[in-house]
Length: 113
Image (cartoon, rainbow, N blue to C red; front, top):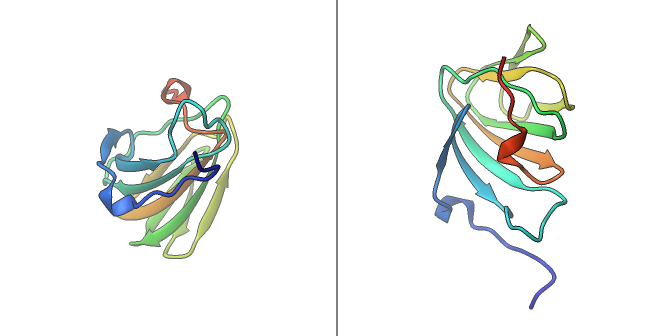
């Protein structure tokens, strides 16, 4: 068995998430390190936060904003955003992003006010 993983994101089935639709790679029981998601943000992404996860967003397409603890910051392609645990956040606008959750994504660590 190889010690590496490869994902073809355009072949991963999208799942609904608070932000829109996410194609999640490397989400396996044996991987606790990090995952990679390609997310198509919808206009009305829900504000949320994580208690354990740090997320890194990389904007690939579109222009809009990130709401980070109530502050709106403009984003465009190639903007990277580092979101530590506890920061309430959401993307605003139609965007395509890469999201790297560290440690690996855990659906139980999505919190809403």
